[in-house]
Amino acid sequence: MSIEAVLWIPLFTFFILLVTDVSNVYLKQSEAMRILQDGNRALSVSPLLTPAAAQSAITQKLALKVKGATVSTGITGKTIVTTATLPLKSMTMTSALPFLGSSVMTLSTRHMVEY
Image (cartoon, rainbow, N blue to C red; front, top):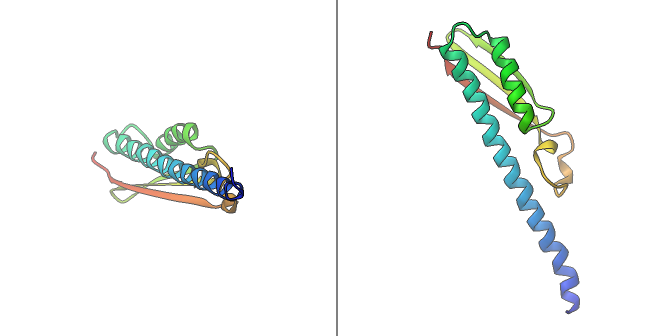
């Protein structure tokens, strides 16, 4: 083994950890969007479900995927609007992205009321 390996192996390891963390953030984002859309859809077709009940259900399902997520759901006119705030730090697997700090990702979905 040469001296170059001592320099390149940590760089490649960091790159692999970086790719893993970024991939996991995109995976968690896609799962969170699906949960938000499913909650909006359930509220859209059921007049018995209230926005508070939908918000509670979305929060419970989202807590299993992303720790520390906050959700708000409301009906504006004939449109259901759900917004979730997800801490990026809890969406990564390793700490290869130390600059994230307290950064958050905000997701918002809209769905027409069907009842």
